[in-house]
Structure formats: C-alpha cells, structure tokens
Length: 267
Image 1 (tube, one colour):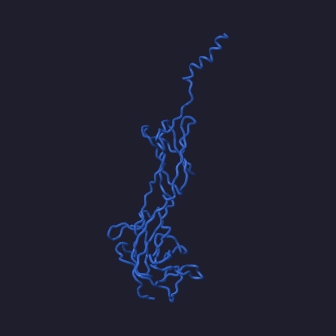
Image 2: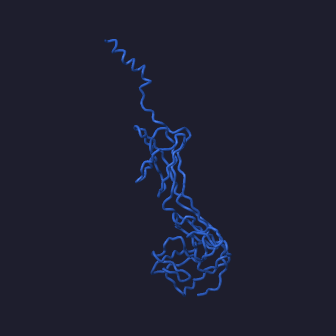
Image 3: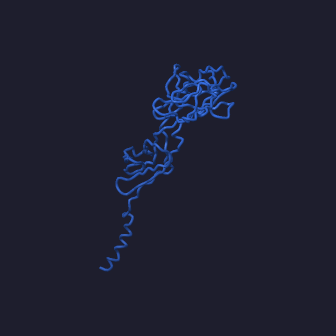
C-alpha cells in the first residue's frame, strides 16, 4: 500500500501534459491595432454676396461682403462652403490684407443670438479693422449691420489703402465624429467594448478567417480610448489603447482674393 501511494505523484507528473490551464489566445503577430477616421469633410470657398468666389475679380475696401459657408452648389454646379454643415460649423474666419499688420474685423450677425455669434456665415469689410464702441463693447461696422452699433459720421468708415490681395482663412469644427477602432481578431468567442459611458459590448460574429475586428463609434472628444475584448467562456481578456488626434475634429481652408484700391465713400 505504501508503494502505491508513492507512485501517485509520479503518475500525475507523467500525465501532466493532459492536465493544462486554458491557454487564452493572443493577437496574431504583426496585427497592430489602429483607429481610422470615418467622418469626411471639406471647406470649399464661400459665396461672396451670393455669388461664386472665383467669379469675383476683386472686392472693394470698406464695402459690405457676406462670406457664406453654409454649403451647397452654386449656379454653375460647383460646391461651396461646408460639405457637411450638419456635422461641422465654422468657428473662426480670419481676413488679412497684405499691406496691413492687423487682421480685418469679422462680424457675426444673428437674429436669434446676441452678437457676435459664431455661425456659418459672416460679414467682412475688406481692409477694415474696427474700433470698439465704448457703451456696447462691440466693433463698429462701416455700414449699418443688425445687432451692431453704427456711427454714420465716423471719418474712418472707408479705409485708405492701395490695391493688394487678402488671405481668407477659415476653421470649422465637428462636435462629434465617427471613427472605427480596428482590433486584432481573437480565435475564441467573445465580445469587444469601448471604454465609453453608455457603450455596450459588441459580439464577435465575424468569419474566423478575418484577421481584424472593427468597431465604429461616434466620439465627441480627442484623446485616449481603450477597447477590451472579453472571452465568453472563462476569464480571458485583452485590452488595446487608441489615440484620437484633436485635428480630426477640424477642417481648414484658405483662399486669396484681390482687394481693389480705395473708392469714393458713399456715406
């Protein structure tokens, strides 16, 4: 009996190759996780006073010019403004004349909100860097503009300047973008989930021969995101880190336009 007891550990050791812990899978070599941007957008040249940008030979100093980035097709079928005005909105417009050291003032009129209000259209008076009206704290336009103070006798209403060119630079931002987290495929049944409030696990129901698993999500902030895979049968788990850059939320556009010489003041 004693000899049999001594043989038990030896028998277990010899049988050790059949008594194994579950070996949870690891991602295939060379399959690095990455994130891709699904949201696409472009800023085309704006309409100038309702007409195509490219068909305006020049703008006159001090004149009222509506820069419209709302988006659409002009009478020639060409795109203008924001390609996706639902997702993106204009946050900044800068107009800079070559012969000036200061940017021109951009006005953001709105019938619904106190001015200045960021919208997808604005008003530009070429060459005009506005003084600030003391009571309201708002800039003075060269022509009457809804929501802004105006002084008809202002001696600086029409800037004195030579012929030159101006650069119009525009920035638009999306509050939410759609991205796709591309994770290595696992060879065990499981689910993937993004570490975001309200996110629910996505079941892995793909063909097992596919080397990647893709999760499309809407995100509202740049920065670090984590995706976790959890096995259905057992404690197996894998985690991957992703970085969404801030510039994915922004669009930029820049155009040049001629500014004619100072004309006769009509005020």
